[in-house]
Structure formats: structure tokens, C-alpha cells
Length: 380
Image 1 (cartoon, helix red, strand yellow):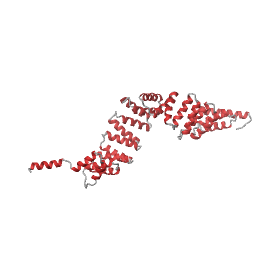
Image 2 (cartoon, one colour):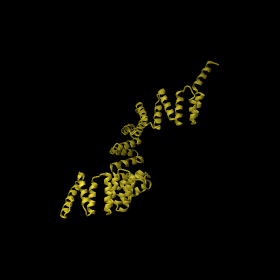
Image 3 (tube, helix red, strand yellow):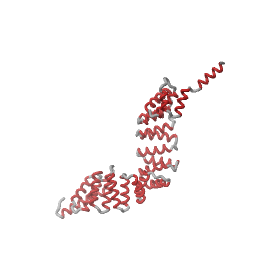
């Protein structure tokens, strides 16, 4: 055989993958990962390509810790950033989120201009409840791509978490200028407007979403409450009624429906919903629920029930102004003014400086009651 032919054959065999490698490639293409792992673990030594196939196959089979070891060894051998990325993803799958975050941070340091790595870092930081760091990472994304809608949405979410709703709303408005029909940005802005108590703007934006066919229950609930604050009680009841059909155990929905019925003049329905809110309540709001129930009883002329509700409300919340309401109701309902006097005095002891008029009235009423008792030959 001539030298040229020999040289050609040597080149051909060097350039052609081995039968073994071709077999592994074929198994990977056909998703036969168990056979890939079985074969590769029989080899004495593995090339970088074979190690990559082994790690991928182990990951596909759910052998996550084996895959993690394989990718760790690969990164030591090859320093390919893709192997670090796979380590982080596996660490998240095995609930090692703090370790995953550290790997993402390492990737950021290696490729500071890689927007995708900044996104992964931002998401990971959020999962680790590192909200300021997550916000900073999303800012890096936003700086590199100001029209990234996910970054805008997530930054707004974090501004709200960090009690900066004004910044959140400003950002979301810019996002909606970029994508006026973006439902997810509108939903985020609705939550922000609720925090800002901009109820009319919230109602208008919710109506836009409803026109787009959005039936999100959270939006309906927030819009229902906003309509209550805007005194649109029929619309409040319509929206919250739909929510109540699904969220049958929502104390907040029943509470606001009770308020809407009361403020629209239907005290009987109001009482039903407020009592249901109390029955469902497991939250710190129960004192407020009882307070509103007491107001409803007062407006319905059921003073004795109002007094009992105010007592429970005070025991739950220790809100000093409730002592005044108890004094006033005892004063108007019972001929014997001793209990009323006691509550007026307790209220003054609380020094409710935010309600100076009520304190002045209480002092005046105490004096009136004592004077009346004196002329009647009684003493308190």
C-alpha cells in the first residue's frame, strides 16, 4: 500500500468517531439514558464528551446527586460555565437553594454581562427570601434590557414587598407604555394601586382587564373591595358575590359584602355576612369584624347586641375608642348609668389624644351623670 493511502486511512480513522462513541450518541438521541449510564460506567476512562453524556443521562434518570457529582468533576476538568449552570439547577431540584444561589453568583462574576445569568440569580435570590439582593439583580437585568417585561414586573413586586409602592407603580406604568395590553402588568399594578389606596384608578384598570376577558379571582376580589371604597355597592356585591362562590371560606370577602349591604341600607343581609366573617376569622382582623358588626346592630336599633359585639371587639383588639362606644351605648340603653360611667372613666384613662372631641365629651358626660346622681341622692 502506498504511503499516501496509509496516511489517508490514518486520517480517516482519526476523524471518524469510534463505534462506541457512535453507539452512545445514538442511545442519547433515542433517550435510552439507563443504557448510556450502564455502558459509560464500564469504561476505565472517559472523554469530556462522554462525561457530559453521563451527567446528562444521570440527570434525566433522576439520579440527581450522581449528576451533581459528574457536573462538579466536569467543571474541574473543563471550566465550562455550562457545567456550573447545571450544578445550580440540580441544587434547586434537591432543595439546596442557598447553595444554588452561590453558584449563580459565581456565574455572574464569571460573565457579568450575561443577562440570562442575572435573571437566574434574581429568581434564586427571591426563592431564598433575599429580597433586596433579588431587586438589585433585577435592576441589572433592567439596565441591560429596559424593555424586559419580566424584570419590570418582578422589580415592582419587590418594591411592594420592601414597602415602596410609589416606585412600583411608576415602573409598572412604564411597562404598560411598552406593552399596553399586558394583562400580567395590569394585575400587578392593580395590587399596587390597592396599597396606594388609589381606588378609582384601580377600578378603571380592573374594568380594562375584564374587557380583555380576564376573570382572575384576585383581581375581582380587589376590584370588589375598591368599589366598596368608591361607594359603588352594587358593583362591589356583584364582584365579591362571584368570588364568594369559589372562595367560600374567605373572611375578607364576607366582611366587605357585609359592609356593602350595611352601607346600602340592608342591615339584615349585612348582619348575616358580618357574622359569617367572624365565624370564618382566624386572623388579627376579628376585632375589626366585631366592631363593624356592633355598628350594624346599632344602626338596626339592637343596642343590647351592639354592646355585646363591642365587648368582644375590645377584648380582641384593645382599641381604646371601643371603650367610648361601650360607654355611649350603655348610657343610651340602660337607666342605671353606673356601667356607662365606668366605661367613660376607663376611656379617659386611656388618653385617646387622637380623638380629643370624644375625650372632652366623655368628661362633660361624666360630670352630668355625677350631678344627676347627686340631685337624685345617689352616689357612684
